[in-house]
Picture 1 (cartoon, rainbow, N blue to C red):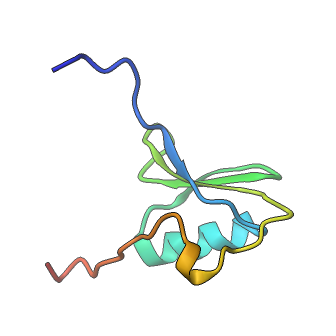
Picture 2: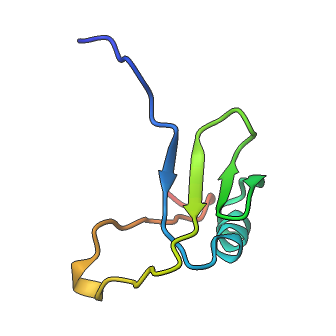
Length: 80
């Protein structure tokens, strides 16, 4: 196996309101907000771990349902 030269730092999800989406995701998934700026919010286990970033995308338009490029499965911690 070839040695890795990097690592995934964040998964970024475009949003017209990154603060609201980050707060919602934090409440749903548990990791706290670890970074805030005017156009970028991150949730992660702590400020030195990879996490989920929510960049401001003012002209963001959600794609039609059948044209989504990614999906996320959220599971209850108590269930398999």
